[in-house]
Amino acid sequence: MEFIVSGMAISQQAGPASRDAWRDKVREAARDKLPKDYFSIDSPVAVTIYFFPQGEMHADIDNCIKLILDAMRPSIYIDDKQVERLVVQKFEPGRPLEIADDLTECLMTALAASEPVVYVKVSMDLRGE
Image (cartoon, rainbow, N blue to C red):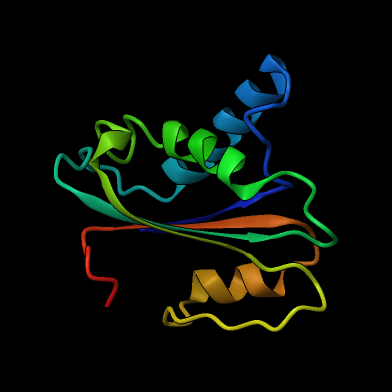
């Protein structure tokens, strides 16, 4: 499953209201992509997070990923300790863009966005193939 969150990612260092609002935004974006009869994954997962800011990203990506992983509990998976593989990258404008993943429709939408977005993919493929 994959989804896009509109807006600039929020860091763990942001204020409590900003962190809560960002978690809610991520949770809502994820839930919007879930099938009606979806049950939370209870096995190990791989998560890919790509940041597409429209300028320089001031927050450290390591401080942004925890909020995103936390927001997917329990809608996508039961606990973020199930994440066994994590791929994270930021793609700031003007830097070479190389993406190893297949270019899905969702990822192409993120690439074409004219506003900051965060692309998230959750998979049970722990090898990254």
